[in-house]
Length: 199
Image (cartoon, rainbow, N blue to C red; front, side, top):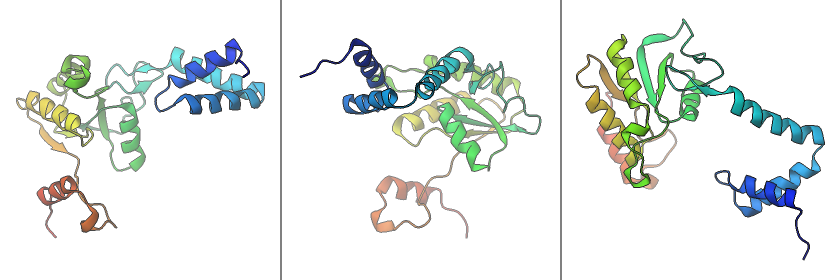
């Protein structure tokens, strides 16, 4: 059986460290990078280097940014009375792409997960409380993921913010349009019943 060159074996090992990439996927990616034109492969390497050297967390909301403050925090047309709390920058991007929210954001950079050894002190909760204390927010929207850890994180934060004059809300949950009740799990049904609205 032929041995891999050191460079190829190293690239497969490095690719295999990426989340969701197993050994076989890493091998396919490595061989793909060997087949494409050199300029294309080096463009990928350059983009990785550029991201690592130029991208940082926004000093105010902890979104990804190439400047001290991200474009959302510096946008004068944003509604500065609303603050939406998300777990990760990718969650912020999803909400932005909906086009339905024009307020500000705060990225926690994770969620409280005691089983994974992640506590409140490892998140951006202290800067969040300072923003609410010093800001003019009238509403704080909890947009953490609807998981045990996400809900626990929301509850923890909402308890910290109780002393401030802000309305604390969470994203609506329930049955999506086009779904069938028979095949909907009980947690979604419970959320839908609890969050029912007037017709």
